[in-house]
Image 1 (tube, rainbow, N blue to C red):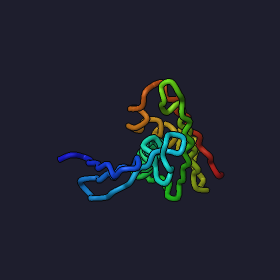
Image 2 (image 1 turned 120 degrees about the vertical axis):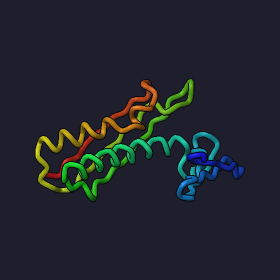
Image 3 (image 1 turned 90 degrees about the vertical axis):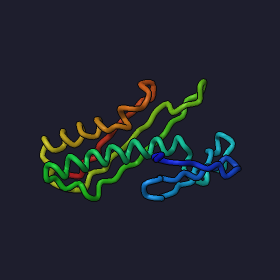
Length: 136
C-alpha cells in the first residue's frame, strides 16, 4: 500500500491522502509561483514537516526521560532561492513551556531536535537553523 496518494484538482491544487488514516490535505502553489496561496504549498509542507518532525523527536526524548514538554510551540520561516528555485533556508523557532528544565535536559532536547529524520533527509545546501526559546 502507498504511504500517500495524490490527485490534481486543477488551478495548481493537489489533494493528498494519507492512506493509513484517510486524512487529507490540499496544497496550493504560492502567490510568488502562479498560485493563490490559499493552502500550504509543497515547500511550506517541507518546512512544517521539519518542525513537526523535530517536535516529535523531542517528544520521544521527553517521554522516555520523564520530561514534560507539552505546550511546546514552533514557528517556521521559509526562504526560497532562485536558479534553481528551491528552499534555501528553513528557520525553526521552538518556544518551550515555562518549566524548570535543567541544563542537561535543555542540551538533550536541543540535541534530539537535530536528529530528526526530516532534517537528516534535506539537501545539505538547504540551510537549517534551529532556535530554542527557554522561558525560565
